[in-house]
Image (cartoon, rainbow, N blue to C red; front, side):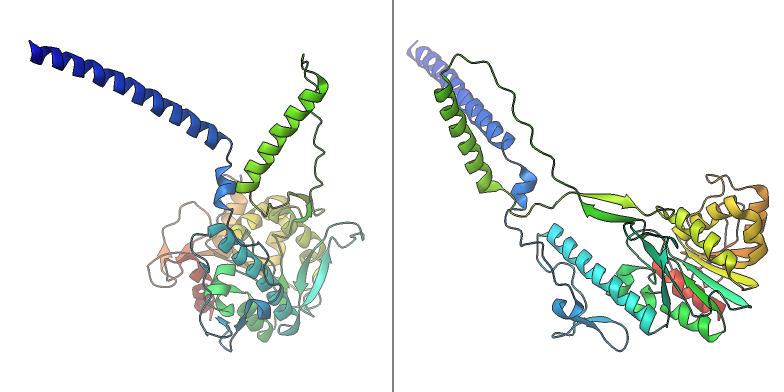
Length: 383
């Protein structure tokens, strides 16, 4: 009997303790939820992030291109390291992008100084107040009576003269830029046009929106007491967020489109109408990488007769065009079959026919499964 009574008492005590413990856990959970609701976790993770300010030149970055065109650290001689700081992906990415912008300017200098190309501003009638783009032309691009080579890159961050920023940084200039194509074309008597299909807008800082004043609330409290209370609450919030804030908030920006060049497709159409169609060359040749192939098919949909009359051959590399989605006519499909070749990623030997996905231009192996290498392989197959 005593044992049964003790067991009953202990059982009731366990229930009471469990209830108390459960209540405490519930209160703790509620408090934790309240805390988390007031913390911007993304901002908290960035709290100890270094400033997003980076060098403006290769020299300040302590990098340089060696004689082989490889980017190397000027002190250690090592290749570029993306993860300069562990567990700070955003900072590393911003650093990489800052270096990429410097690389872009470096390639422009090479086009002008090494390749003797001339920058031409677009639109041709641009005003001083307008955003602008540009392309590069060889000295004889408009006057060469025989041959003209037009280079069209893919989409993304790459600008005039580049195939792939990643290849420039991680491999070398010959792999990632159009310079080998330009050099060889000029040696063989071509005029050259280097397009810039991704320079589509001017990015400017968006003006800050004025903070709306809070609507007054009806309260029975005296105004002075309510003001003191509001001030205390505001100070609590400021102190709380000051502890967890992100010390470097990025400003918001907006994009102002460049007239008649606000997309890769618009850019190619504009360059065709104002430059390619007015060039003296009897034979026009085009190299189009990735999205450049899509833009070319779009151009044909709008200038089919002109393209057929002027363009002799098109070399595509990993083109993403789609004749069905782009509503290419039967006559365009037939022309692509006869005048285009698309070198694609494949483990098969270079120039091995690859089964076509659509009834348009024949597909050939680029000799590698790595997409960026298609350009090198395709150039080799033309030699």
